[in-house]
Length: 334
Ligand code: UFG
Image (cartoon, rainbow, N blue to C red):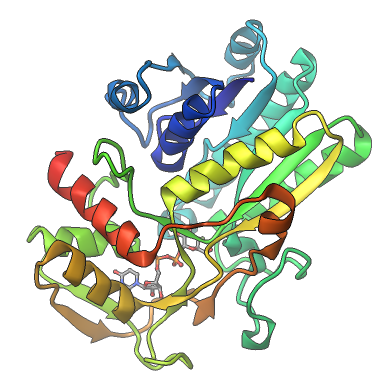
């Protein structure tokens, strides 16, 4: 398949471009480079043996997208979005414009071009603050109330996609709800490259291991979890990337809306992540317990049986692999 990958120069996008190429598909990247670098293209080429076609454009630019789509596509995987939770609280309109507005424009351009196979980058954030009794989260769990504008954009975009399918049954839409994607490609050539001080746990821990930051601040140790720290379903980004290829191959051209959790099905606490990273990096990782971070949930992890059953997909890489690959990227890639 020839696949348009929006946000294909970003963290999950770049890994998915590699997985698409390995599976024999042709990926064409559209990215506005607000949170990605052009240099990722050469790095993808070193892993996948060919450099993907790249167009610098914003998905909100309907004219540009119509032009891109003239060359003919079988499907679109849509990653392009802003994703910093804290920033979304400060700049909600920016988030609604980029994420929701971008999806609107893209769907419009795809409709005009007759491309109706769509794979969407969603998030476990749509489950909101889950009742502990409802863990693990299954896809049929009612969508919650988001705790921030970023989360609301994901909820709204999912709804827009479901409505689009109601109005035009030819749409084939796969909604993939990621839990906590971490790690990097095992080559150490591509990974997550947050600008400034990272917000998310593993990129922060990586910088502490490297000596660039002094210590990890553990946000709360009084949650109702085994060691009191937050529990998340961390999942290797290469597994996530492969999940997109599986969903695409399974559902391309098949009318419907297909929703899957992508996680390992297993939760790990913040302290477990720090310990695993310490072991893989062989570096001390100092930490201190501080207050809870506003908006954080105590625990969430996925029921992943639907993706296993319908896509034949399972996240096989373990926490040790996630830490080892993250550390290789942290050391090699700068
Ligand atoms: N944490 C720390 N210290 C840090 C950073 C994080 O203790 O410096 C803790 C958090 O409190 C949480 C856990 O580590 O318990 C994971 O935090 P992350 O920021 O790595 O991830 P979140 O679960 O908060 O966020 C992720 C995605 C969001 C998404 C959210 C809900 O990054 O995009 O899941 O699905 F919205």
